[in-house]
Amino acid sequence: MTTIRPKLVNHINFVPSDYDTSLAHLTDFYGARHLMDVPVTPPDRACLLDLGGVYIELFTPGFAGKLKTFDAGIGCNLGLEFQTDLEDVRAAIAERKYSGIIDYGSVIHVHGDNIHGIALEFFEKPFFGPDRIEAVPPVASPAYWREDHPLGLLGLMGLTVAVSDADAAAADFCSLLAGKCTPGETRPTAGAKAVSVEIADTIVEFLEPVADGPVSDHLKRFGPGVMSNVFRVRNLEQARNFHADRNVATIVGLAADRIAAPPALNQGILFEFVQ
Image (cartoon, rainbow, N blue to C red):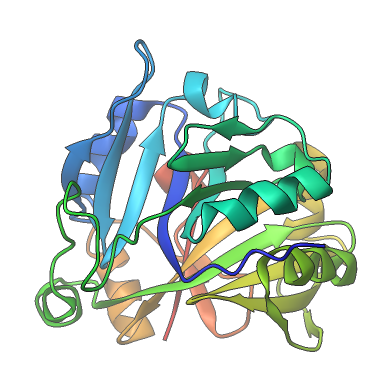
């Protein structure tokens, strides 16, 4: 079968339970930069933010409902967009008989129900690098997020995804997206087995519950899909203090070397931080 070979992650996609509240929160609390509103069909809305040198696209539930099955009253980690050759994308999804495809010509959306609850988006142009699309404002310099911002962000490490079978999910993503799989490991803090797949410039961690914990709870409540977005930081204590200074106590992350912001802080969207 045809394999898609992504070059990089253009952006990650969120669906907050309340669009305006989330936009204000991410810009006020985390200092995210609102870059632009993305044209979608009214009354739906979308925009691009820069947080830590990572493009984040916010969607209203109306549009996002075309991309993944979810409860519109609860915040949702929707998925991510890769930059890649779209002819490979069209061939790969046709051969696998995926349904719910939205093909705009230069952008293709693959419904999350096709592949472990992750809504995938593919775009033919990069958001980063010398050939980046000029229509999108650039993110702030790495030095700003690393040195000047109080959270000390270094960019995106990757995503975690709750699934019922981590080995099968990892194999599917390796086949579809030319991923490189690493051996599984146990995550006692999450009550899960983790299998990681390196895809382009990011890591997707598939978490399979082996005991009661946050992963089993997520599957029971929401089904398979993205659990968290993992950001790299200069120092975990700095990240912990950033939240404490804003009267937020961080929690244990989905791995022993991580902390996380409580999901309620970000309308159900889990942010993890790793050094």
